[in-house]
Length: 106
Image (cartoon, rainbow, N blue to C red; front, side, top):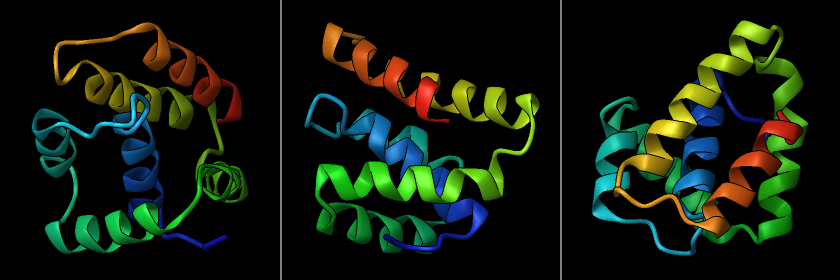
């Protein structure tokens, strides 16, 4: 588990959303890249790829209390997650399940 900065946490969550269907598309990378510093993106992407699914969830859970302090914080991140989920024009049942799980985790 990693202690992330706020931007790293956002990036990590957005990558988790993009990877929900086990395929991060070019559109999803563009959607994330528009919000994140390129160096931060590459660094967090490498961490994300090295982690197992369980480590990813643990990392999100461990860092959320530091960065999700209000309902506004949560809603802002959920809005960004939705943008990533819809970036490739597909929001299938697997992605929906991951989205609802993320909402509960956050």
